[in-house]
Amino acid sequence: MTGSTEQQAEQPNEQLSATTLLRFATAGSVDDGKSTLVGRLLHDSKSVLADQLEAVEHASRSRGQAAPDLALLTDGLRAEREQGITIDVAYRYFATPRRRFILADTPGHVQYTRNMVTGASTAELTVVLVDARNGVVEQTRRHAAIAALLRVPHVVLAVNKMDLVGYREAVFAAIAEEFTAYASELGVPEITAIPISALAGDNVVDASAHMDWYGGPTVLEHLETVPVSHDLATCHARLPVQYVIRPQTADHPDYRGYAGQIAAGTFRVGEEVTVLPSGRTSRIAGIDLLGEPVDVAWTPQSVTLLLEDDIDVSRGDLLVPSTDAPATTQDVEATVCHVADTPLAVGARVLLKHTTRTVKAIVREIPSRLTLDDLSPHPSPGQLVANDIGRVRIRTAEPLALDSYADSRRTGSFLLIDPADGTTLAAGMAGGSFAAAGAAPARDGEGWDF
Image (cartoon, rainbow, N blue to C red; front, side, top):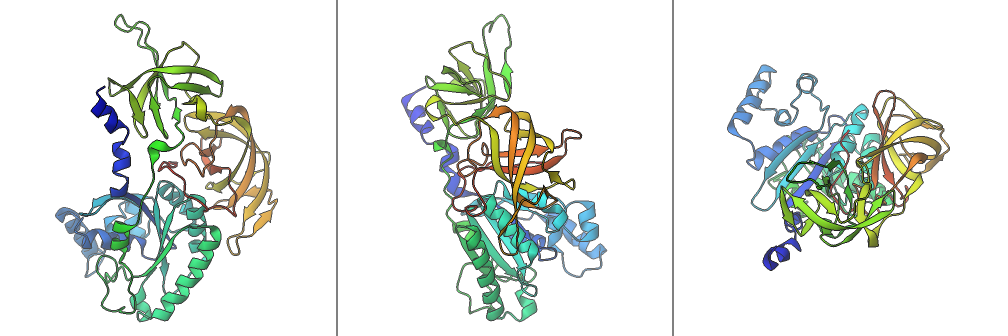
């Protein structure tokens, strides 16, 4: 590899593009107008193709609506269109001259909270909608708590339907004050409140003529200018092994490579690495990227590492720099969002999936459950039910190399799975506590996918 190419490798493309790509999610209670906001955002930023808009207009007319229902731009499932609700996470990709966006429109119904967890787990910003007529409700608090636990660094409070309360500043101010106090207590590092009307387009893309008392940015202006800083290449380097490649052909009789997607950090040829949980060490003899040898690789590239020594490495093992190896443990303490209808009780036998490794485990203790009304811990609840957020202590059958979720969303997160039918029971975040839930944002953009 030439010096100029190696110099470029020191500044990965993902790092350079970090400030031009924003992943964000919408959240809020039922009928707060999330899908309408997303539709308005896409429509007014001219990110909707003509055939998409025509299909929405046709669907709106068939439902007896005079104007296009912009919510249909994201509510794509038949059940969503029939019921007028959002059920699954809808992802949209769009761009303006200033920034590219990946948007996750998440459901508001309580029973679909797990979908909100999925959408927000990769987000760098969450837009929480509140109906100006209803103010902050339980689901609003739940979404704020989840955003804090997932360490989303930026939260936007969009007070929607301001047209239905006469665009009154006092209504907006009261809601903004209540939400800001609640989210700040959770530890959300940055909160921006914006009064909007998604249906009328006030303060979504264009500034509202009805709220001259508001001097802040529109939703799009804030999305285009909010600072996004996540230097993925300088995080703790981690490569979960997904597959061992041994072609054993005449051309490659001794080839043995360990393939996977780099979860965080940077790996270099010649670097000493440790295989976890075994603790065996070796040096990187080579790195293959897209069939070509390279000297340096970084997250989120998918690569194959070749080691100097013939040691035992299998799927589920974790390759890390020997100078920066996490401790392995069989005792996991974490915060979990319970997403299944089946309760999670003390003594439950589960599977714990961490990166590419799945091990048997048992829930030894549930010390507390978060009470959303006042953020107090409810001690020793005995079990967690759907949508509960709680602390758990788990004993695993095999050692795991878990990072703190505060350091890495990818290697600090895990799933609890029902061994009987494969149902996802809970999404877990290693380390931390309720009190410090949002104290510092996680440094990489990976998350869960149920």
